[in-house]
Length: 297
Length: 282
Image (cartoon, rainbow over all chains, first blue to last red; front, top):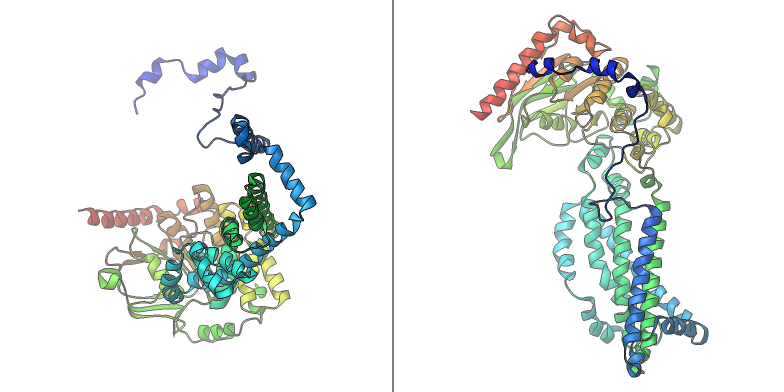
């Protein structure tokens, strides 16, 4: 706007002549401020991330071990050491056929969850695609979500007794309504333009429901499943407490009856490990089912 | 472009060609009114207009003037409250492959490769495998994406994604191309490249095109005719033929800028736009 201040000062041309040699030489490396450990939305490398994760796990075990050591000796059986619990788990596997209990629990989780998906995926999909189906079903399913699964236990006992079916039914009821609601959200989040562009290509309604809406929401649906099966694991002990003879929960309840805290904690640890493995299996499935998500640039 | 006329695929395509022969305009709006919120908002007010064959018609106007609504009525994604919109004399009763649309948002299916995306519309319409392959190849070449045929949309830039959308829409063999701010989400340089590519493609494929844009330069560069919409209620304020272009389309945008009459046209449209905006403020 105003040239006056510039005309008096040294122009860039003068600088070029004066420091010619200097300008040609490579500039020293720029040192940006050091990244703070808790930089906002800072980056974390792959190995750093793994390291920090290990630190968290080890810290938990160290805290547990310290708590054990600090407990008075005559009370220590109520808070056994990490080593005692781990060796108890080993003992259960080698001497008590624990593997059959673990297998039974895994079977219950996966079978009940399979049927929950069989129910929730189409329901969530149709609710997300058809306003009238949504209006028909949503008030019912929405309300059922608020019933604690544990409150079904007496009812299921009366209906089915201490059978395997009662346990599967409880695990099913524990997650099916939430899963439906989550999948409805996933389907509703499909961009309107994807649906409309399919319409302008001449796609039929069913083509859009299954080949566009479902296909588009599929990675998010798998994510919802991953989150809900974690909830299913949390119901496992409730399901197996009641008149169960097998499964991890039953083993833990037997431990409780004889104040074997090491067995109870062993059960908790087993469920934790199995939960992590389940989560991992869903992530790996997503990796192979949706290769295009990895192909982001 | 023999490849365009030779396909035998869709049954409804035969119907289009009958329509084209009937002498009816590709699109006709007759006393079209579109109300929202039970009549408290009038997006379009009694609009009657014909879209001419093989022309590029641009709809411009201030934000919220109903130009996109008008395009969506033509696509069959919405229906008028009053009046009728017809394509080759037939009332539009829903979206269809004969009226292909490109959206501002990216609409490539992320789970399909670029080639599969381009073939998708043809697959729906029952083109043979060989036709799908040949036409996909042709249209991918046309938008310079043949090298990316096996990539996923997630790997492409915004401009490339819009080129996929254009190739996909053309491949389904539409009679009409409806473009809803197709370059609105792209940065200025990519927009400019895309505009030049669009001129080239539309010229080669000789299509009837309706383009919604908020960019005055883009409208003048691409269009043979501009419909200027007013806002609330949405009416056509002026129907402007780009006579200074004398029926030519320019491969390069700078060729247009030196054309006598260009500056006057741009000034006229900016003035109209300003009047509309100021009318709203005061």
